[in-house]
Image 1 (spheres, rainbow, N blue to C red):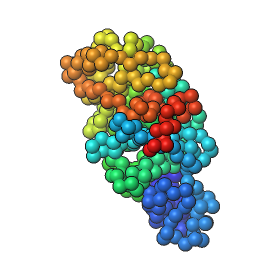
Image 2: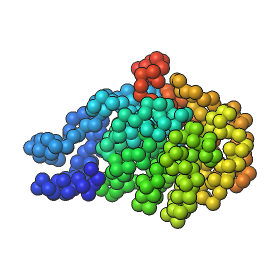
Image 3: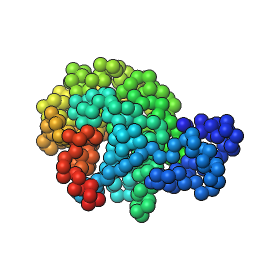
Image 4: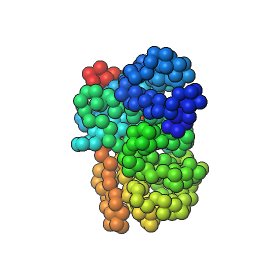
Length: 351
């Protein structure tokens, strides 16, 4: 439930609304505990509340740490037995959590291992918020700094699970919850028209568009969502909301696939597409995964693509691959058994 709804729930049961804040603070402090712990409440109150509200949203955690770059991944077994993943990327003084919004994904992007799973189910608002509280607590309990940034770039399409994602955002940004600034949060989406407009108009979070190709025929071959909201219509929507997008970061994400979308023609079309939107471009060289059908472009080809955009005065960056040794890199998250190499079990036992 969003903060206001939870306060109302307590009021309807005859309890003061501040109990909602106490419940949240207890969840934040004891997020890694499987049992409800609220030391300021009587046993009677705890029993009454937890007859209707669930404290724990997960039943098992598996953990991996990439020995090369210290990226960490958790595979979370949820209470119904479904499994999802979350990834923490450390970088100097930043701790960024890659948050999942679904188990699997219905968008079916052909370069993405999560898309190969198809959609198993949506995560609840509590399961989405729970990822943040849990990893933040795990980091702090070992003496590390807590989370500093969130990117909704894990498993799933956030705007395909709009209500739950917006519920989690309420807790993240509201002073009743974490009280984070919206500029510490980025939502990534392939573009679903109505939820995207609402997000732009009703929230101040940063936005990352999973474009991957500006040429409609190329995009349709790798991003099936092109059939729902074509790239040109997506661009028109963003231009229509240009005022609302002011003062926040707008990024276009392009996973580069060798021989598919990495040509000079692709770069020129991307330049045309981005012009006038005051946006930057992140180039993501394809990250291989078991069963993946594409190849990663050679580094010179990626740099040539970048130079073409930079020469057109477009801010363009090549995203550094993180977590590749534990299948935590962009596009490689998958909880089906065939997608987890045997040697990851050894890494898990050492972590």
